[in-house]
Image (cartoon, rainbow, N blue to C red; front, side):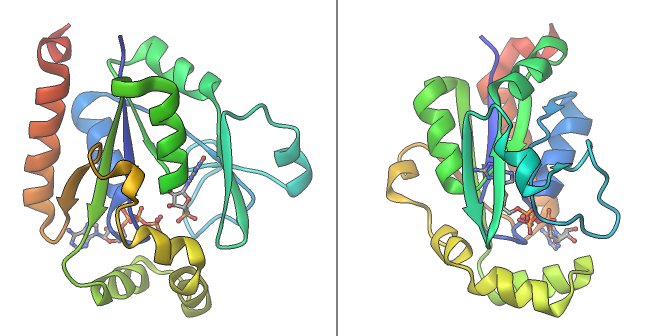
Length: 189
Ligand SMILES: Nc1ncnc2c1ncn2[C@@H]1O[C@H](COP(=O)(O)OP(=O)(O)OP(=O)(O)O)[C@@H](O)[C@H]1O
Ligand SMILES: Nc1nc2c(ncn2[C@@H]2O[C@H](COP(=O)(O)O)[C@@H](O)[C@H]2O)c(=O)[nH]1
């Protein structure tokens, strides 16, 4: 029974960084999701997201879809199953409602990791350093969804593994320990 590691948490907490780490370190499949938001500098269609128009998004066969900061995001079971077919596990980055949908659908097969930081101000610093423009940052941090995901939703309280990503080296250790606990011998298959 393959697993999917689902990273949630507000913008800038390091979900994408953690996803890349799990992909590179454990050969996890990165599940590419769909969005109608425009690409950021350096983002590539088919690798970071499938970038859609509202019309193309509306024709997709998705397990779940949400609105986040006025843009649509969604993911499919087919995307996950393609990843499982060739990799020991999969990893995906979702907002908290999407994580709940996968948890309801897959139970313990979906391992939810909630990333946070000790100081919320640090998130703006990170998004600025990442190169996001100030208008996008303001829109993002004032969005209802960002504000909601600043706190772990009640439905994920007893489910999510919480990692405070203040120090990237410590976070890598915690991610590694979690993967080993969840997959054990499967990692060596
Ligand atoms: N522990 C850390 N300390 C300092 N900077 C970090 C740390 N972890 C990640 N970063 C940096 O913070 C920035 C935001 O990280 P990342 O893009 O992974 O966040 P995210 O949660 O995926 O954000 P978003 O939801 O906006 O896509 C990146 O430039 C990343 O290199
Ligand atoms: N429920 C879903 N959430 C998704 C999906 N793809 C990404 N996301 C989440 O959206 C926000 C914003 O992403 P960003 O790349 O614009 O910063 C973030 O929390 C992602 O985790 C999805 O398919 N379904």
